[in-house]
Image (tube, rainbow, N blue to C red; front, side):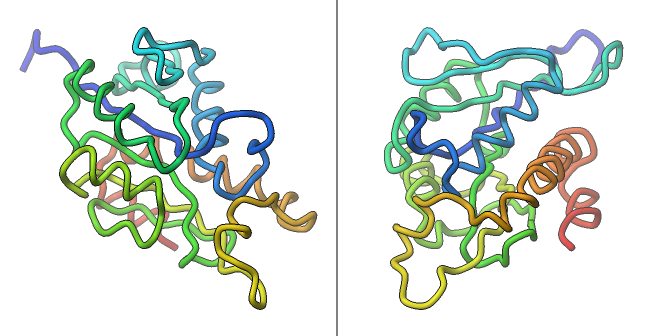
Amino acid sequence: MAGEPAQVWLVVGLGNPGPSYAGHRHNVGYLVTAELAERMGASFRAHKSGRADVVEGRLAPPGSDGPRVVLVRTRSYMNEVGGSVKQLAAFYKVPPERIVAVHDELDLPFDTMRVKLGGGDNGHNGLRSLRSALGTGDFHRVRIGVGRPPGRQDVADFVLSDYSAAERKSVPLQVTTAADAVESLLSDGLERTQARFNS
């Protein structure tokens, strides 16, 4: 309808704040939102809630009328992100189905990715916190494969460690592809995005 305000999406990069976590597998969501912010020509700034850094704008080439989006990196640790996201969703009037969580996924091999709507938390503390705070799991997910830990390495130790030297060479392309998938999801919808990216 003409004159209606454009719908806003929240794109939440899951991760832990602070430089000591920056290169961890668990922080790949932060890397993707950084890539999207760069595409928007903007920098993260503190939201007035004090609990997150955000970028507001349109996710589209200059001059085109892309979807309105708020990129989010919370200042909470992974297991507490839900409260911050719930507060932002209320502030921007965004329902769960227009929230996109970008996160690492143990059950996908490294260098693969899946986009989906809804589902469980699969032991992921960030997803568990989001589901609990929002009261539903019916939000979109961009799941970036990190694979399972080698040998008997503890899962928590694995995701809270840096990518291997070999993996680090592939991470920039992985991040670019995930950012492309977010753009596709917001502009072209879930089915077309799944057909294109759920390799």
